[in-house]
Length: 204
Image: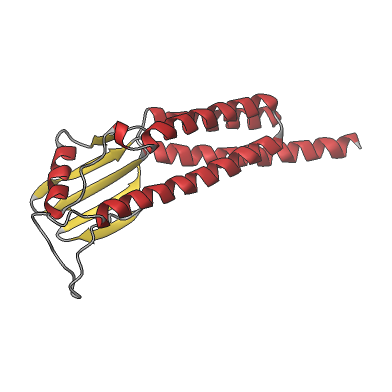
């Protein structure tokens, strides 16, 4: 059972490292003028269109309503910091698996949970800034029923209607794998702790 816990922690580290290869998040937009939809993948170090030309078309739409262009890799500190954090946490999971102490598995789970929540909060702030900090000279200026400038904040997760666009935001394969990895670390702790407790009872 102790070996199984170590294996699960190694898997947790490998699944975390999968973020270097797979996108964390996906945002899809559908509207009558875009029957095939537009989509954007968010990686830990860059953005990528779901289809060729998607990022360009999203930037064109953003321009008309006054949103800033989508950031390039060197324009966001997250694209520099996130790969470092992910690499460190993936390596720590494997190191903790080699050490084999249950408490370290729990520490890793707690750290990853906190970092995950902070990452989601940072993502929300990014979406909010892009949807509210609009260019006053934008070609299209729309107001709500109270005369206030419209906001175009995509949902953090789930669905939202923005003008005639339906916007969906949800974890991509990398985000799903990361979630599984975090869950595996908690299972590894439970197995290792249970095994350690049984061993102490047997010895006494």
